[in-house]
Image (cartoon, rainbow, N blue to C red; front, side, top):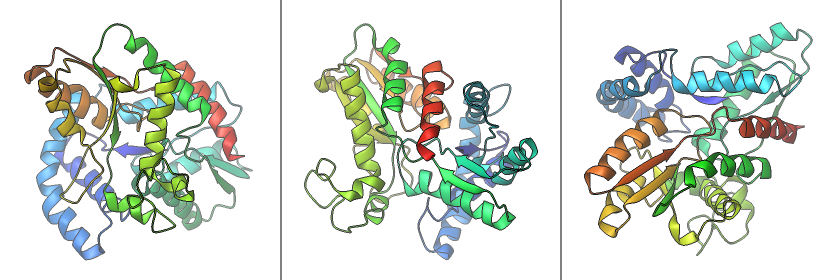
Length: 331
């Protein structure tokens, strides 16, 4: 299961997709009436045309890169495991119902389904909403099979190995900095996911101090991924930075912001930059348009000499093998 995509680059399809996406109470966690006003009267009308233009820049002939890549992952994974596999998106198509029906068609006496959310890190606006959406769809449709879920895999050795190896070829040669750019989330999402209510973003060095809150703490988990991949690649820590992209709205979000950090780099002597986006296992709008196009253009315009975006793992063999291994964690 992945995030999703509009069906086309038309403004009409973007309005439909953005409305479904942003009306999710785990994405914009405001009261329903306020959320409706923000989304339907302010954000969607103004954002849809711009989003349509952005999608047009990265759209493939076959369709949405995210959907196409997820389908290719499914096809590659089917050669590694002996079970039928279907794909679903949290928003847009294919829907949970389509995914479940595809499995039932292949296996009419289906007793168990393993849900694999393609999010390495736990966040209420990604992993949590995907799982709950699939659980609710299963209940509403009256399916009797058991649903198991692959847990967040931010520090699983198979994921760390696959991510590191997918990056390694791109790190040959000289560069000044490697930026790990993760999808950002509001700070309140971090504190809301803290079961103790007094650790995340409240205790000094909270991400480094062992606490049960880390099981649902996005900030801790992405920091852990950065640490483990840096170690696996034998990188000098002084040449590695971490930031958060894709901010929406004016509420406090996790910092530092990629949109702030990258433009400042050339003036600080960072002329050769490499960027990787480990929040995503499949390239999408946030990686192809926001980073590979916009961030690169701004970096070079402000004096940078070289900007290299490191692609997501997509269908690399090392990642497909890791996926097969991660599926076993749900059993």
